[in-house]
Amino acid sequence: MALRQQLHTLPVRLRLSISPVQCERQISGSQDAHAALEARCNALRGLLGARLTLWKEFEERLQDVQKGAHEADYMTELLTLNGGLDLERLKTATERLEVRPPTSQKLNDTEVTQQDCDLS
Image (cartoon, rainbow, N blue to C red):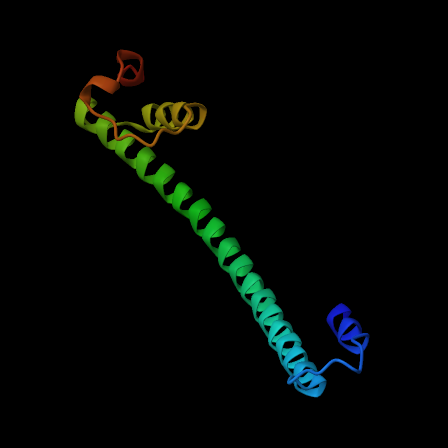
């Protein structure tokens, strides 16, 4: 709008080869293009926000799956080291799993302590 006001305040006696009407058309076209681009950017921002929400939900579910896999690996290690488990030993091992913080590393033989193996 400021450009249009400046355009109309030009002295009339100036000998210009540029038509004010042509400049106003270009300004109007630029404003329309800007408005269209702004609307498209807002739409893209909304889509990106939705995708980010989906990604966060996926990450949460992935962490749950990794935790379940970790627990299964832990139980497999216990079965490998101790042989079969009766119900009481399985219950004790499950309670220890619930107390133990999850790690993203896979258990190996050195990480299983004697306390973990002693389920009786």
